[in-house]
Image (cartoon, rainbow, N blue to C red; front, top):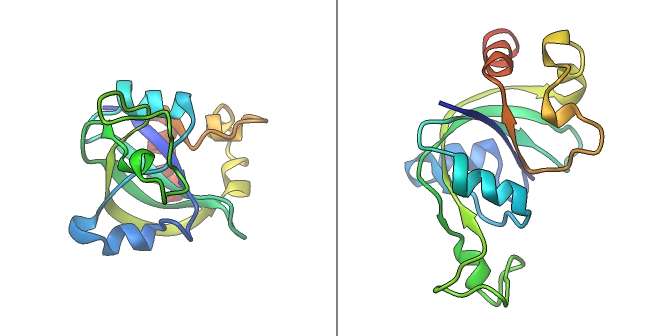
Length: 152
């Protein structure tokens, strides 16, 4: 089992949207970074733990716990000309962008980014590395246990 931090802008998909979705599951559409895509395509597996992170908002931070609910499959937004995530170089025969489904586990009291910077146990967490802007980052088992056991 692996663990991940997945960022979403709450006006696109919040932890409340995930909880209210049919089956409490959403496709993680719109990822257009190759490294994040490769995590979904090559490494993520159903059952992996997810820290659901609200980003690009007044109070960014971890808002809930989720899990990977599917293997990777082509992101349909790459094929839709009216989508902001449309990719004219992608085709059904040769998709460029993949996604996984994510399912709701529980909402937590927001753990702000500033609070993640305090404990020495989280000092190496990828989201805290200067310049890191990836929307999906691995989380170590120790970081997962610390966050879900002490902060969440």
